[in-house]
Length: 212
Image 1 (spheres, rainbow, N blue to C red):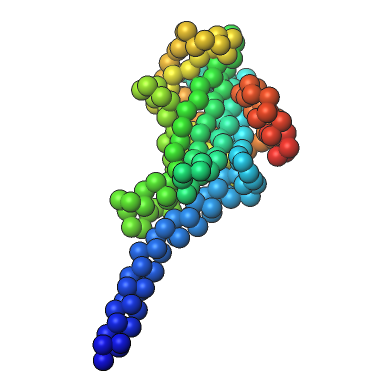
Image 2: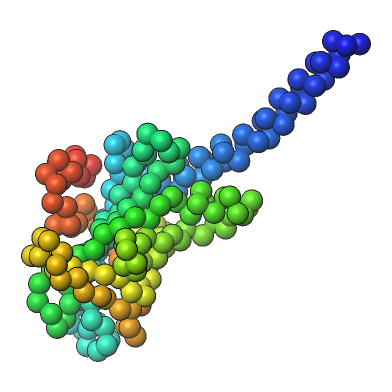
């Protein structure tokens, strides 16, 4: 009788452990599924890259006289760190303006994919692909949504700190406000070559070229 009780107790403990482990496995699958969508299946090691760009033509700019942004490039990267189960996302943003010469850029962290990031507070996280990328020290940021069958992203912009690319020390940061016509911008998926101007590290540039 004692042996039967021990076996029953062990079976109950095993069942409890299995149930507790299921959300972690589900989160890992959601993380992998998100990465495959965002990087069009090219989730390699040690980093994955996705490039989205938009060059607004004269006709578009004429129809949107309040739009300041004439060119925008977005490079999203993801990698798995040794002490984390899930991919960590980061971004680099390149911007040109209709009325200011020069190239401007910004960068920051996006954290985990949204289904993983929300799992602690929501047992059934929403299926929408939407995550926030932030610049350090209250530098604002952007929200990113996959769109158009994962062939584009919608960038939602309220405020973000940017720097002129020719200012390597970052001594003159500026702010880009969303405004009337710059608050929601659609960028199209394109070759990683379009975003190589956002990367200064030679080893990372070489890694990007291998992932074309």
